[in-house]
Amino acid sequence: MPVPGAETDVLIIGGGPVGLTARALLERWGVRVLLVEKHRELSPFPRSRLVNVRSMEVFRQLGLTDQITAAAFAPEYGRIRFRDTLYGRDFATAAMVGVNAPVPESPVTGAVTSQDRLEPILLAAADARVWFGVELIGLAEETDSVVALLVNRHGGEETRVRARYVLAADGAHSTVRRLLGIGTTGPGALGDVTTVVFDADLDRWCAHQPAGVYVTAHGSFLPLYPEGGWAWFGPTPEDPAHTDWPGLVSRALGPTTEVRAEVLRVQHWVMNAFVAERFHRGRILLAGDAAHAIPIVGGLGMNAGVADAHNLCWKLAGMLHGWAGPRLSETYDTERQPVAHQTLRQAVANTRLLLQVQNRRRDQLRAGEASSARIGLPWSEEYFAQLGLVLGVAYDSDAVLTAPGTPPEPSESGTDYVPSTAPGHRMPHLWLTPDSSTLDTVGEWFTLLTPDPAHWERQATATTAWPLRTETLPYEHIGLCGLGPHGALLIRPDGHIGARWVDRSPSDATLRHALTTITGQPR
Image (cartoon, rainbow, N blue to C red; front, side, top):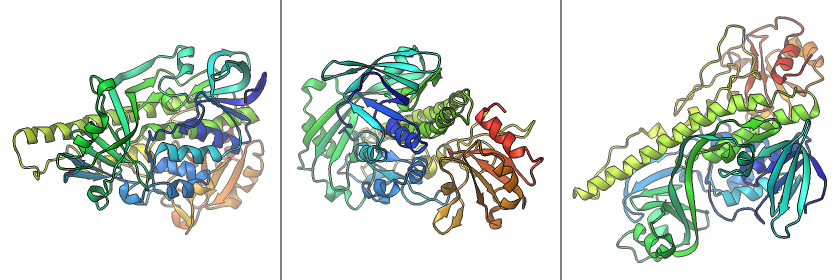
């Protein structure tokens, strides 16, 4: 319940997956957190349905992968199928790489699961305060804090909360973004969409050909939970108030089926496509859909928001605990905004290509071609991999230390992913033991990964101002990491490489200088 005059280190606005992930990460850092959500409870609507392999790596760090997987579909549901109707046969199909089966580039596999199954797991992952039914109506930034004006939506009481920082994860229609007057760039609204949640026995058509999404000429079908439940989504009709939703869904199932859909919920929404012009102003930061609204095709939106939180939370913790300078938060905008634009371009391309398939199929049917006719996909089987975008992100900012005169390696895009230990890149996954990955050495600390810990020991003991752990890299991996026998990688808490020394350190102050530079902490 709201407490008058409450104070906190970080005030999170919004209780979706991004806000809940940030709450769990910040609590692990020992940061005082208060999350407020304007609705009375977590959303009961399925909404986002894909946890990609990079998000699952973040959730592995939080110890949540087993719970998420237990509530999710089996890996074979990580596939998209194209049909004339749900009753019909596939005329095209593609795997979601990294979800459909394990990939050697990661210790985890993504999952097809509904957002209303994911959010309770994230809520239970931390004990930090959560106020439901409380809405933000005003913000005032002061010298070293932000004062938020909140209102209880059920009683009307107003409460002021003072926070050192505010993290806005309040969706595409963000109140915080509006209050700050931050504009957006991009296509904007792509169209009005309706999601219909319904019950029907569809096993006879889908049980032996599972998929996370069935795209038809009459909208898309999504199985919601392993034990049952379905959703249909498509363009909103001209007169939604008088639409026969059970009839519409039943017609999309197929003309010969006698199945009648039992409609449970109908939700109208707008498919937005934009990126905020900036991700932070002073002590107020935007994340998730508040920072970038990504079309749903390809399942990139929520996952980009989880990556936002992972990038930002260690920086907030450093500034609050005193081992990072106050300008470190500026690197959040520098690093994540280019990724948001790249993700938006990919998602818009996904949407256009999906429409191409649907339009080509309609043309075939109108021309009287047999329903068994194949259609050439406008992409390869690798199209839905997107590992380059998911795992290949590279940051270029003051929080990455590159050799003088050495530009950072470019980030991969689309499907291509080549593991790299160049500064700015995500640390590649390599098995250290049968159960432990290089990614498992990352946590609420910086990691110095080296084949020669003794060589770096004196430097490491002189860096007590920062959370730092030293981990041994087996010699069998030094070639893959581009290191000599005395080299080292300095990995940031978000798993991205902050600095690399191919062999011996140039001086006894090398490691301290790197941490000072990356964290923006004055000497």
